[in-house]
Image 1 (cartoon, rainbow, N blue to C red):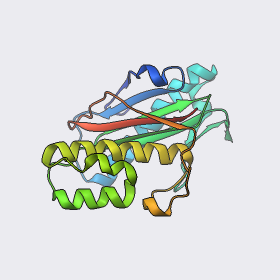
Image 2: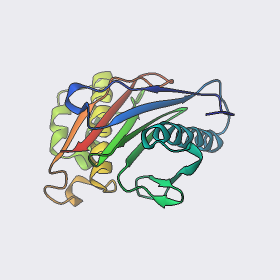
Image 3: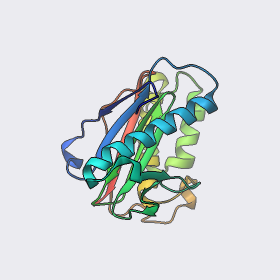
Image 4: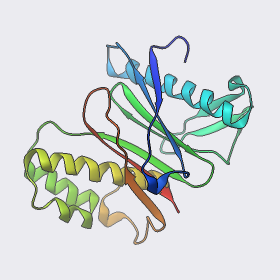
Length: 205
């Protein structure tokens, strides 16, 4: 990642998903400025990280690899300008940090959500019921900090599952029954450079 003040590290995975995917964190150090340029710099660092890591896996020159982004779709790895269909990618951003995951075995999805610092409990419960669905019942007895932390974790798992299934975010009632059949999900032990966050990895078994 020459030219960028970025740090990359592998993220340890729970036993449930070891061997299914690999996950890396990319963090920009000592950066400041408007959100849009920051996100573009971070995206560039993530793409460099992807190409560098997967060049070793594919035993090719990193300059032969690139990442293609399409709105509403998972990023795709290109080798010599052509899609390398065997490699599945997923990326999630949080401030000056990002996670990216890859697998050559199954569809995957990774997501990271900052834990909200405040907010009305009733609103968090309402959003959870609207988008998360039945699993939101687990949040019913929670309030304050505990509610916001649990909400962030459930939301990260929802987004990771949706990415794995190739679906956009939609209200729970709009999703077809069985939309995530065969999709497993696990929280990941990782903290963003900005503090506590909820992180999840989903994969199709």
